[in-house]
Amino acid sequence: MVGIGILSLLTGLVSWSVDSKFLKLMLQGGYFFEESVQLILRPLLVLAALGAVGAANAVVITFESLAQNNANVNDDGTFYNEQGYHFEQGAGEPFHLSSFGTQEARYPGSTALFDNTVAGIVTLTKIGGGAFDLRSIDLANLNGPNSVTVTFTNDRAQQIQFTKVDTQFPLTLQTFNFGAVGVGITSISWSQDAPFHQFDNVNIVPEPATMAALGLGLVAIAARRRRKA
Image (cartoon, rainbow, N blue to C red; front, side, top):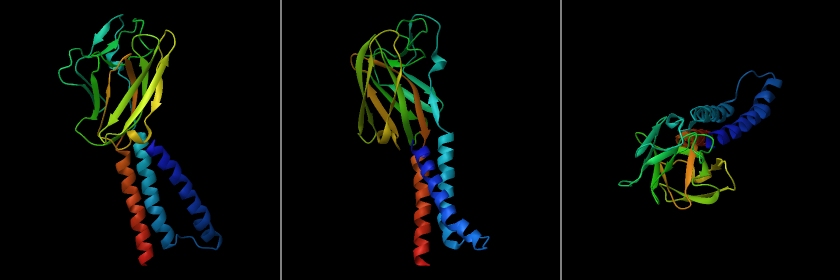
């Protein structure tokens, strides 16, 4: 979200800079950038490139490697890793992370994961540590048509709640966006509270907040240099 938003903003800024300064110089017969235009555009272009890299590196964790063509509740262990990210349930929970087979009545159309322990905690982190942006997650009810509310808490103790309503079978997945709560985090946790949920399609961007801060720092440096000149 941050990467795309920044890229869109920069596209507009770069377009404005070119229209109002570069083209004006061209019409006057100058075929070069003034120093002030260079100081502004260079860091903006760097930031745009960094935003594009962040968007290109976005990953969606689908859990499809767990898919099984059966009608069972399949035990998937105490943790799950995919594309550089780590899902782990709380220590000592009696029942493990699980998923429904594709023939199970509660299968939501694609393989989704859930904590099979009542009040169990799932925590998402980046393998090896580091910040990331959690853009969105898909949720479905676990035990049939119902309304379930899931509370997510990040490493800054910020919280966001999503409520998923299923009125009939088959159960379906719905996408929920994290906004600011998912930006620049190192971990996020949530609980398996009644009437219970399953989750899928976790959309993550690696460290876009860090890249944005670097680009904005370059803009600030350019501005200070201009004022001193």
